[in-house]
Amino acid sequence: MSKYDIIVLGSGPGGYVTAIRASQLGFKTAVIEKESLGGVCLNWGCIPTKALLKSAQVFEYLKHAEDYGLKVKDAEHDFDAVVKRSRGVAEGMSNGVKFLMKKNKIDVIEGFGKLKPGKKVDVDGTEYSADHIIIATGARSRELPSLPQDGEKVIGYRKAMTLEKQPKKMIVVGSGAIGVEFAYFYNSMGTEVTIVEYMPKIVPVEDDEVSKQLERSFKKSGIKIMTSAEVTSVDTSGDGVKATVKTKKGEEILEADIVLSAVGIKSNIENIGLEDVGIAVDRDKILVNDYYQTNIPGYYAIGDVTPGQALAHVASAEGILCVEKIAGHHVEALDYGNIPGCTYCSPEIASVGLTEAQAKEQGYDIKVGKFPFSASGKASAGGNKDGFVKVIFDAKYGEWLGCHMIGAGVTDMIAEAVLGRKLETTGHEVLKAVHPHPTMSEAVMEAVADAYDEVIHL
Image 1 (cartoon, one colour):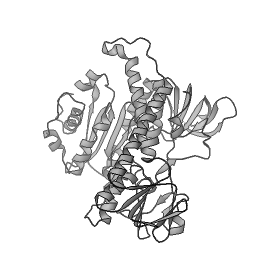
Image 2 (tube, one colour):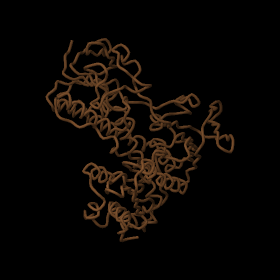
Image 3 (tube, rainbow, N blue to C red):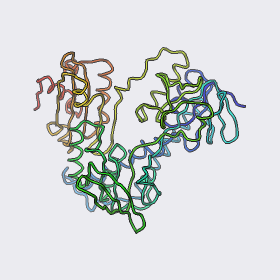
Image 4 (cartoon, rainbow, N blue to C red):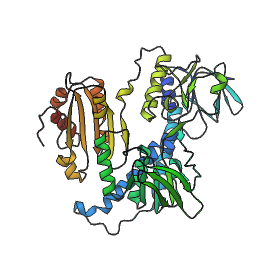
């Protein structure tokens, strides 16, 4: 039986990052992976979707070339080539993880791993043991009883990335990050898209003003939106799909070629031996402490299988913290209140901290500032004036409670707010930090200035 210091079950952005940090700390490390290195994120999620979205963005630029004083005759897209490019990007990233495993002398064990008592893992009949076993098996698309996925007419996100033929009409059920990203992509490619959202607003976890702005932008681009609506059944017996949608006004039948179910994710905890070992779970989440230890010594869990936010960067941070704790380092528990969230549709969305409504609910006396990109020189020059930056501060102490952005490139800007909040900066300190001109990032400084009645460009 092969013996390791640390075995990581799963090689997504939680698992492979954990393994690399463990190796750096001197642990003899192995990773078990049943499919492709990099997990869902690199192969079927974060990375290939961004490749699809970039193709959509470039195609939109071509269609609006005259807005920039340019002429492009008959801009066309090759759907197969767009998908092929996306898969190529994913393959390249997965190969990059292979290189990192080799560079860091991490053993990659291919197969399906099942936990055993006594700090062991069975991989397709072969047993391995370790002093510490870290579960990082991730999640998959959640299925609703009223919306069973057949992989042909009712699909999840994986199939949506590799369709053989572009649908003429698509219904997207759910308007979280996955739903709105695919809605934007397919709409940009020319598919007629309708979003059906159960909650009263799209991107329901975001600040109300962000949700309203995205709805305006999406409707302007031709996406139909139904909120406070629920798909109660689907009929796939004909050539396409007929979805029965329950709304406040009654039932409505929508027809499309394909329904994309984007109603969230479900943790991959089935058949991995949790019951055999006695590891405690709540619904589909493994219960852990601040350092990702389960109730059974020597077994840990990180990423989407735990109760924290199901985000790639969260899984990576949890894994690093977990192995550093194992190594005896002094580590602070992760601050889940300062985790940025990003959505890569167009306009992009990025946020961190409390929304305005949440800040009020928690009893804060707040200062709110907002700067629209319509007043930004860089946004005007770039032809991307939709959106704004919104900041929320505690009026008493100046604490930066939240930051919410919607617009071009904002996913690359949100880190300023994350770092500022981590360093406990105040609004006045942000104001005195000179921002370069002309940039989209100036909008952060301007929004803060607006909160403190010092705004210049409004």
